[in-house]
Amino acid sequence: MSQDDQTPDADAPADETPVQRALRLKKAALDARPQAPRGGRFQREQNARIAAGKSRPWMSK
Image (cartoon, rainbow, N blue to C red; front, top):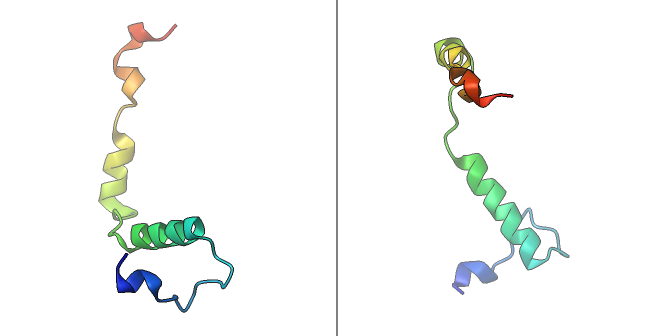
């Protein structure tokens, strides 16, 4: 483990388990990632796509 793993975080609860800490850090990393744009032309294009099963009607029963 690095020295950074030993330092307590300011927003971490005192009784946090290592698994809870890992989950909190993972969620923080996911939240920091850039998100897809919401609304506008991009979302209209996404919604206009045909569902996967609709292109093969013989697959449905």
